[in-house]
Structure formats: structure tokens, C-alpha cells
Length: 185
Image (cartoon, rainbow, N blue to C red):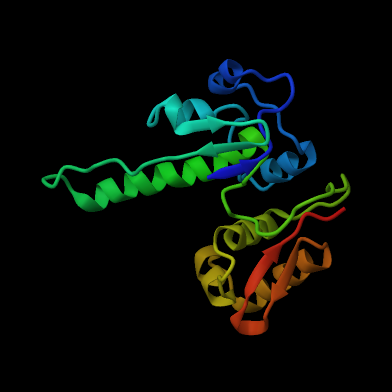
């Protein structure tokens, strides 16, 4: 994973590894917190270090590169459990590194994200649930959302239209396309 930008000014490598958090885009972090896509700020790097050493991080003036090798599994163990553990760690890494260094945000939101969310922009609890599912899978269908949330497809449509009207969501390439999640100014 390569993140544009080195360590934030004033943050040492030691502080970085201890979990000090200096988000570059505070408004974006607020949005992710509102959508419950981040946990506690500053918890990601120490959690990564539980599984990988500091040598996984390569710092330069303009970039931070993290290399996480899949851990070798014992053939006698349950391979599915091991794969799930590696996948879980990978997912945590993607989501938490973005919060820690303001760089790549787990590949969850595509494109360049800029600007800030106005304080008055509010999504309902159900709209947040719908948006979280879309963030997790930008090719998700109305039917899949309906099944996941236990609501009907017409209700999904109403929630999606409200989210789109607030500028958080766009449909790209028609019915066989994908969802693009936006952070609006």
C-alpha cells in the first residue's frame, strides 16, 4: 500500500508507531466516524504492529509505503479459518491506515475526495446503513441491500434517492455499473 505524503509535519516515527493520530482531513474523518467506518483514532498502527513489524513500513519525504506479507499457514490447521484471519487483518489494515495517515483509505472510496461535509448535512440511521453497505461493495444491488437490511426494494430506492439528493452518492455506468460515494463541499 502506498500513501501519498510522508509523515505529517511534527509527527515522529516513534509517535506514529505509538498510535498518535494526525488526520490530514478532519472533515473526512468526521464523515467516516459518522458512518461508523472507523473505530478509535490512533488504534490502527498499534493493531497492525501486533501482526507485522515496523520493517513493514518504508518512509520517504513524499510517500509512505506499507508491505504486508500473507502469513504462512500450517497445512494441518483449518485453512478457511486462517484465510479469514488474514483477510480480516487485511481489511483492518486498509481501513485503519487511511485514518492514521490520511492517505489511501482502504480502497473503499474511489477517486479524489476533497472538500468538507457541511454540519447541516445529516443522514438518517437507515440511510447510513445503506451507505455503509454501498461503501463496502460499490456493485451491490437494491435486492442485496434489501435482503441485508430486511426491507423491501422500494424502501431501498427511497433511501438511495435521499442519499443521492444529499450529494453522497452517484450511479456510474447505468444499471450494470457501480456506485460512487462522494464527500460534498
